[in-house]
Length: 90
Image (cartoon, rainbow, N blue to C red; front, side, top):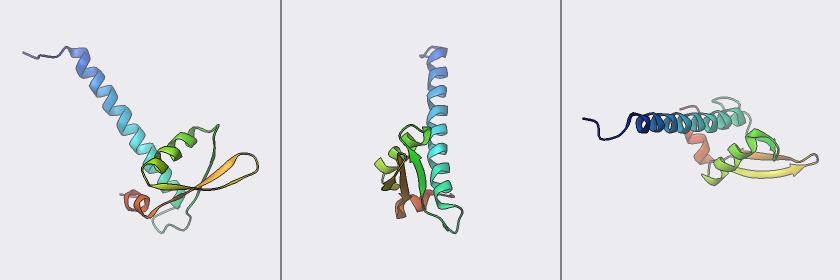
């Protein structure tokens, strides 16, 4: 007999899917910043009012990106660190 109600497992599954989606978004942001596997580019431009702002902040918190300069219009550049390069395109 299952000791947990069915909805508990459904909630766990939903949480797992949300975490997987977030991890995929983080990885895709790193890959976009680098351009491709040759890393010909290393920047991601975003602003505080963009959906990608929180993604870049999370990558910065994890040590996978560093914040670069800000320009007019509220745009801030983020750059992938060596640690971030290790997980992109894997």
